[in-house]
Length: 561
Image (cartoon, rainbow, N blue to C red; front, top):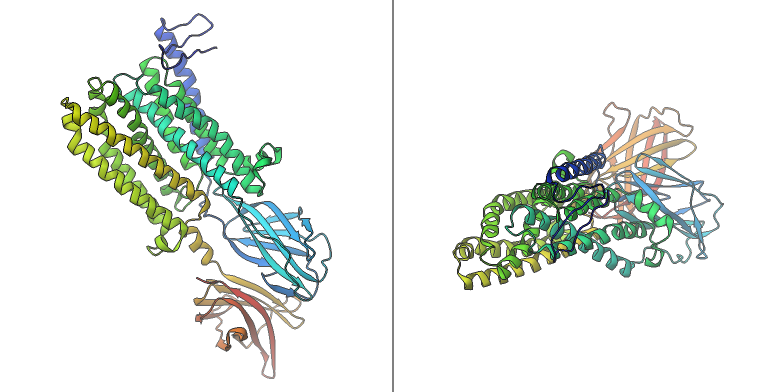
């Protein structure tokens, strides 16, 4: 089947090589309906497959073994990284004291922990374990932990330098993708359902759609680069695209491409086909946004994904209608009255859905009002809210002050309305730019999940061993849990256990707290206050008999709040 689409400046036609043409509307509609049904089925299937079975936050490192800053007496046989959620490793590297690097390629995934084999005996000095993983919400996360063998040395150069060129490219690609989805697909819907002359503004909508079609695959490739921490020059490398295809962001791109394609098809053909394909494209915008990202990965999934879907669909309807409406009012004000009337009637419920879904999603992501000021994500949200307040105010003035006179034919008011709509479009683009910046900022919800994770250590001696867990693992009021065993992993029926915490470098002498045994095999210390973050010395005084106390100790890292 061969389709031909003539540029928007001429008459739009669709023709087929098997004899069907525009003069046979029933056959053409059946053909289009069959094609569209297949595309919609694929879209729905992808949307279903893109929904993971459980909710995940933006991954954050919880613990490392060896612990960050630890000094070991001998080379470890393996390393481990524990995160706040399951992750997929992208790059694992050990930087030796002399600055040389060793790629760590042998690892296993054990729930939220990445267990990494150490292929060589490490020499004395300070080493850096550098890691880069991708979380289930599709965003790469990286960092480093330092540990020493024998004694510390000058730390080798390692870490995560920010590639601002790559970040800039990611931001621009996201901005163009948003323009394609919201202005392009949303504009196609407005032309199909609201406009009297559906060709008016078609060129602008088609341009936005083409920008989105180019930006979508480019954005996916940049996701792979960011995941590997590779420079922009490696965009064409197969391993970059393989990495990108393993992230959840691939579903956003695939569904987005289908939505953009459907929107482009809606610019030609019979009215029924245009409306059907434009409607599917609008729904595809919401499905694409719900397939990956911070908000869609938040818990509870049954609420957040539908809200993201509704939020994205409402944005596309509103933002996509603005430019075609402004062009229609400027070029053919008399014919644009019906367009303006339909838009003004539909926009109120759309804005209500947009505002309600956005407020709920913001509450879920931010959690605490203080996070609006204390986090980068919160500050971007405040900037977006300020732009939205300006946009809503301007839209309200347009709706209740300018719309009625413009519909009545007041040419001066129509010119004012065109200028006002132009300002609205500029504000919408600014909001897209702010939203694209969220790509680099984990939400406070994810930071809170990481902060609530326990700090854990394993202490092992010949006489006794213990697993000590302090929850949450940051300074403040905490609870400690201890599992006590003999040195050969046998049961140890201790008569009493005392937890002793000290931080000599901060002038804090031992804090002693007796533990209780609630009956589940563990010992607990509740209502314990750790005043400062940093490295603490944890000691367990285990009363084995009336005449013997076994003392085991190890450092434990307590995070700041």
